[in-house]
Length: 271
Image 1 (spheres, rainbow, N blue to C red):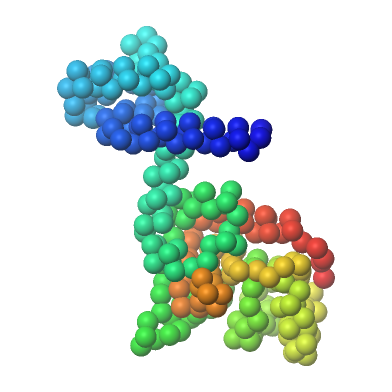
Image 2 (tube, rainbow, N blue to C red; image 1 turned 90 degrees about the vertical axis):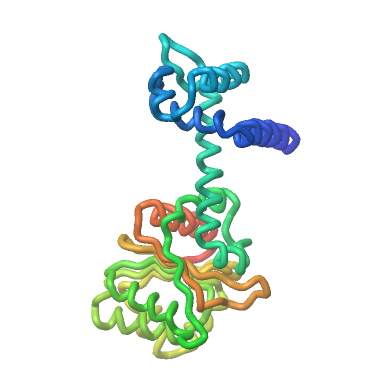
């Protein structure tokens, strides 16, 4: 599909979603029959609207091939299912961004690929933690607490931070942390390698696998079987250690896994 065709498809989909979102009833009807078909009585009881209002909305949706009637039951067409799925994602993405508006608005998001960014709704239940002027270490301490409670970690590390690295080494030496996959840029790898202690106890540790990316990373993502955490850079290029997103549910873990897999595909060298 050419770029022109893609834009035409996106414009059509945008117009369709806009048409739905500009009507409270049309949107509610699509959501009402999204999972299972329903008859008029069921729709009237669920939506608390008179039959005439519901039938008018259904007729509009039938006209544009989003809903069809089969044996007194109304169900989504294939187009209707795809459109409603995208509408739900749009609403959930908006809610996710709104729930952590300060976090997303303050940071550079360019390191997150578009295909993964569009699934930001998966982070809708993530917890936003921020340091304060009276305690600048709240976010950092929460992070250290998190990594101290697991045995396996994957970390996209975009900064050279002795504080972070010392805590990770302590966990490795105590055998609390039994497996670590570390993804770093060439620049960060060289900085770690120059430190004799870090080279011996981190890079040369048999439980550590280091992967090197041939570009600078602008995302600090940590993932385990129990949690994921995310910190980012300010738009001016400085790393922000004062705000962190933390998720423990399966959706946030899925989002983190997808991002790590994407970045891992760009590896140029394994150590």
